[in-house]
Image 1 (spheres, rainbow, N blue to C red):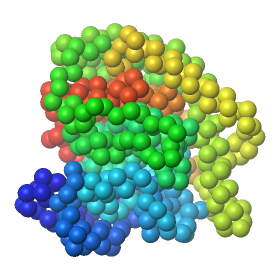
Image 2: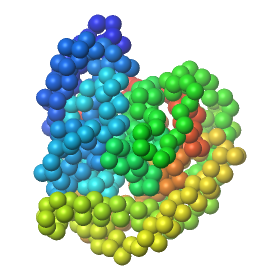
Image 3: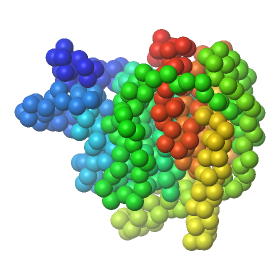
Image 4: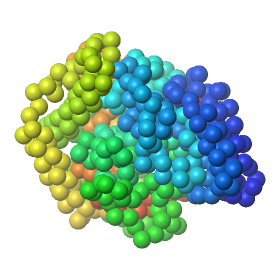
Length: 466
């Protein structure tokens, strides 16, 4: 798209018109986009036309959707998937990462749906309804970046912004058959309001159709943000250049067992075996690995941090409104999380942060022996809509959630980059993703391997029937 803009073959207005046409055709079916900002986009294009900058930047003219969760666009509302925030005031500033995409030429024109505060692995909320999987409209698109993944899978845009605090990029990427790269902690900016999410467990990037586009957006978005105490040092060369480099003979560790103990569904186990054979045929060395991670420590620390963050966000909103949040403002599972976090002490948060660091160090030691770790993204295929919604009793929710985040949360707590690649399909036509994890700062290794797999096991021709 951006090359066509620079050559004069297409105009940015052409691309926006095409994206809006596709939105009008498919969004009523999938409900991936919950807010449209067409006026903002057209004003931006008019300003660039007057300034003569319409064809500038690596993302010149590319229409962009971004996630409606803790991410802002000046003059527009961010609802965080919650009725409590649907009437919040328009943002005074644009989030740094979205501003960087815009500076590279992208054209934000809408937001994608997310569950309330990103608290579940499906994209369903009482505020906005259900986001449907483009491969099967009865199924979930995953979460919490399900709106973004569904929008890309349905062809509204080739790339959409997403965030990941426990698997929220990789899970919907797997369920929707697209690529989802969770970058290293502090690789991309989280400001300007806050410089890290969930002690660094939550990071932002994109979901896309091609490895090239994931690398291109990582180049546009990465780098230190003024005011942030932490950042991940960039490579000496652009990530898009990594795609031309041979990954070499990699030492690959295979992790088969979820930290929740949930068994693998047959289609996921079969895709894992196919991926192992494929990697072996490409000349990579494979070895079995059992991770020495205490799941109670991992999920306990992660839950403590998330619960406290959500409580603080709700309390800030209550102060603005001058009243307490009610059952009409918050969903059932959110209210349970709020209640459970009430007794969290400063010492609990301090120990949770220490757990993040100790688990991160344990994981880094694995990369003294291995270049990447291969595992499923999830233990189960995408569920039907409703099973993982936040509007249900706690016991039923927990029972259904066991198979969804047992592999992904680890990289959030430990900080390593991890990517979901669409390497399989189930017999009933649902995508299956496989996850590769590398050492901190190892996005280059992941992108080189992803490019090799994309070339030797292409997925571009697999398109969602919607």
